Length: 530
Image 1: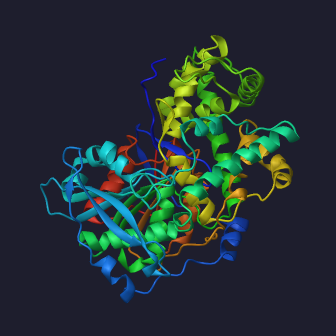
Image 2: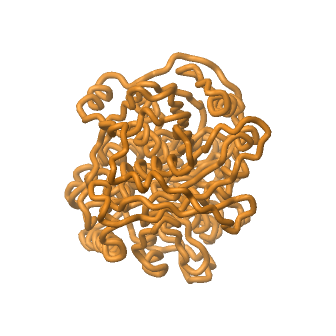
Image 3: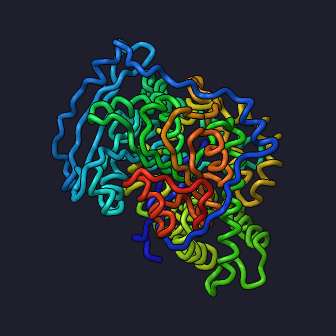
C-alpha cells in the first residue's frame, strides 16, 4: 500500500472525530423530516441558548475596534494577523487571548461579498491549516472570487495559544492504551492514562483551560467579524464547526449572514447520548463498508454472501488477536500495531468512502502478511502525528473543548460497565471501545461550564443545514434535529456515505450551497441530493 495516500480531515462530536473527502452525483426533492416523538420531546426539555444583547458592552469595545495588521505568513497569496479577545468575557480586564487569523483576499471578478469564515471541525482542527491547504485554494472559484476567504484558529487550537498536554513519547503511549479493558487491572491502567492526560493539560494551561468553550470561541468570531469590517458573519462550518456556527447564530442572530452548517451536530444532546448516537453512526458506516468490501476480490474479511455481521465478527477477532500479540509495522520509532491503533485506523477510513480501498489493503497486509504499517498510517493521520512523535495539538484541544462544553458522559468505570450493553447494541464492533473512550472527561481538572441546549437563533437569516444519510461521525438525525431547532433552517440532504457533503463531488449539493453563498438564495427546505 502507498503510505503517501492520505485522508483530508475534519473532526467532530463528543470524543471522536471525522474526515472529509470528495465524490459525485445527482439530486432530487422531497419533504424534510424533523425530530418527532420522544426525540422532539427530549429536545424541548432542555433550555434554549439565550441571545446576547445587540449592543456591545463598553468593556468589550476596545476588542471590537481592533484593526488587523496583515502580514505575509509564508503561504503564497495568504496574509496573517493576530487579534485579541478577553480571556474571560465575564471579566474582560482579567487578561487576553491571542487569536491567529489568516485570509486570502477575493480574487475577482465580481463584486466582493465580504469575508467567508471557514472552520473544519474538531474541536481542535486548525481553521488556518484548512484554509491554506484546501478552502483558500479548493473552494469553488466563484466563491473565492467574491469572498475574502478567512480562518481563525479557535482559542486553545493550533496557532491560537494551543493547549498542550503530553509530549510526543507520552502521547504515543496514550494512543496505545487498551480501551477495551478485560479486567480490573486494565481498567486501572486506562483510568491512569486518562488522569495523566488531564493532569498534563491542567499543568500546561491552568487559566486558559477554563475558557476554551464553544460559546467563548463563537464570541471571538464576532470580534473577528467586526475587525474585518463586516456587518454580518458569513460562514461555512463542517462537523463540530456546525456547532460553533450554530452557537454564533444563537448568540448573535441579528449578525448571522449566510451560514452553511455541514455535517451537523445536535446541541440539545448530553454527552452520553451524543457518544451513543455517534457510536451507532460508526456502525452504519461500517455496515456500508462491509457490504462493499465483500463484493471486492481483495476483501480480507469475507467474500460474496458474507453478511455485515460476519464481517464484523472477523474484524473483532482480528482486534482481539492484536490485544495479546501486536503486529510489526517497521515504524522508525519502534511502534507495533496494537488493538487500539488498529481500531483507530479502521475508524479513520470509515469517514470517507474513497478510503475504503486503502482500508482493504491495510487490513489485508495486517491480517495476512503481519504488516501493520498501513493501519498505522491511517491511525497516525487521525491523530495528526508526524515523524518522531510530533503531534499537533488536535487531540489536546479536542478534549479541552469537549470536557468544558458538556458534563462528562460517565463519572466512573462502574457507569461505563452499566452502559456497555447499549453501546454494544449500537455497534457490535466498536461499541465497547467507544463506551470506555467516553470516560475521558470524568477526570478533567476543570468542571464543565456548558450544558446541552437547543439553539433557535430566532430572527436569523436562512441557515443551511446539511446532513449525509450514512455519515459516521455526525449521524443524519443530528442534522434533522438541528434543522428542527433553528427557526430559519433549510435542511439539505445528501443521500450517501462519508462525513460532510460540500465539495465531495455532488453537483446537486455544491450548486445549492454555491447559489446560497453567492446569491443569497437558500435551497428549498427538504431538498435531497444523491
